[in-house]
Length: 209
Image (cartoon, rainbow, N blue to C red; front, side, top):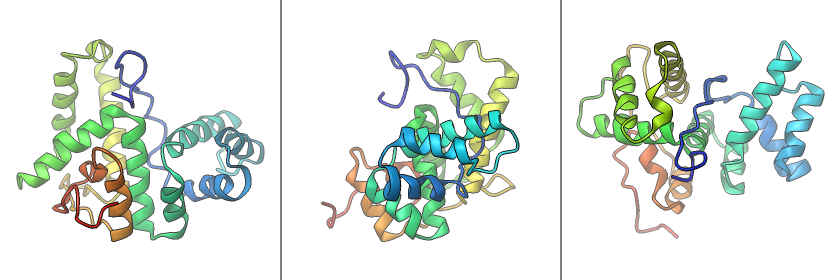
């Protein structure tokens, strides 16, 4: 499980912010056109408060989290993020979160996508909590999560889904409207990362590289 820490442990530090859809182009532009180095991007974000955080400590937290997620995207994805539509940008930041955090990616595939394909597109809060408890059978780091921490993680994941346009305020899963350029980029990964989305688009296609 490449997206988790150490010996298969889940990263659980994704409760900082949502998808960072508005902030992402700033970091992507710095990386693509100025630094080609994520460490330098983070330093620039901090030094100039480019994320317009209220305090220096919150700016550092946001900058660290943003850079860690965006480092999961390759150059082609970053270029689409800066040049594409707002929908493509939101979807790419959802992909970045799914790659960075295995727990989020597995929830996207095993619960969100699965419920959509089974035509049961409601996503009640307990769906996330039940999912985490099922994963605790193999992940000790989930066993002792407090109820408040579990709620915080769920609140963040559902916020990201809403910001990506994949979940309504009423808790209904919305189909992803993946563009052809984005679909091609997602299919280049193995396994196909179309799996992170509620969509009827096939995971692979005849035109894939």
